[in-house]
Each structure stands twice: as structure tokens, then as C-alpha cells.
Length: 212
Ligand code: NYM
Image (cartoon, rainbow, N blue to C red; front, side):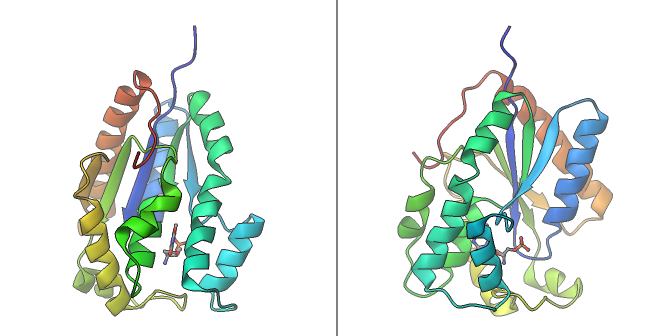
């Protein structure tokens, strides 16, 4: 008997929405209930491409805007063989940011269309579920100061939020909006329920290709 594939579950949202905390809690909860699950995050800063991105985000180097967009995409593509291998082994992947962050952040810069930004990520493994952790800019501000990385300003994040809203109109992607203003445990319970359903549904479905 062939093994059932794992599900590709993505968490997206503006900065401070609690994505990383919730990804960690979800992986732990899935493992505790006997499911095979692992976490991944993008950008994956440990690869050669990831190191270029890291230095850019930390303002230690400057990269031309199109160039850095393509590097973020290349950083996803370089991990596709590993992602597919794990999914085929029945491991569900919980991913902290994916192509949607790629498009939302670059298209928030002047002169970048959504279409141009989506192109390089077309054909990536398609998530079985994308949960968008919704948090208003004022609620995000109450969670403390932004860090010192590039893009971490309230003005830029507001535009990023609008770009995410445009992406969420695409019915070819299974979006689920999660109210991230609630306490950590309530948000987690919600995320876990949606994930368990997605894992069950994915077992019987072939892997799709994003935006194709
Ligand atoms: N980011 C992330 C992009 O601009 N493009 C992408 O494709 C991805 C995946 O990098 N501000 C931005 C969003 C974040 C930053 O932050 C990565 P973190 O804290 O590592 O998630």
C-alpha cells in the first residue's frame, strides 16, 4: 500500500500576527496526536541564497528590487525537492510564510504589479490550506515596536495587508482567515481544527501546482 501524502499548510499574515508562535504550536499539537508533521519557514536563511536575503533584510547589503524578489522565489524553489520528498513520505508541512508573502511584500513597492510578482512562483507545490492571521495595524502596534529589519514599518505593513487582501480574492487557493487578535490558545485551537480537516482532505487529493 502506498503511503498517504502529507498536507502543505501555510500560515501568512503581516508582521506581529503570531505566525511563528502558531506554527510551532501546531506542529507540536499534530505530533502529540500521532501525526507526522514538520515546520519550515521562508525565507530559509541557511542556504547560499538565504544568506543573501538575510543580509538584505538586516540592511547589511542592498539589492535591486526585482533581483531580491527573484531571490526570495529561488529560495522557495531550491527547497521544493525536499518539500515534495517529505509530503510523499506522509509528513505534513507547516510553513511560516510562502509565495503569498513574496507577492504581498514586493507588490507593496512602487511599480510592481501583482502579476509580475506572481510569475516566478507559478507551479510551486500548491498549499492545501493557507491560513491568514488577521490583525489590524493598531492591534499589531499594541504588541510592541517593530524590529530593525527592512519592511518593518507601520506604513509599509498597511500596504502589504492590502496586497494580501487582493491575493485572498483568488478562489483557486484555499484561504482561511483567522482572527489573530484573540488569545494564543483560542487562535491555536482554531488553526488546529482547520489543519486536521485539511490533512484528512489532502490524503485523497493529488498535489496541486500554485497559480496554474
Ligand atoms: N519576505 C518574506 C519577502 O519580502 N518576500 C518573501 O518571499 C518572504 C517569504 O521577509 N518582513 C519578507 C517578509 C518579512 C521578512 O521575515 C522575513 P521573517 O521574520 O523571517 O518571517
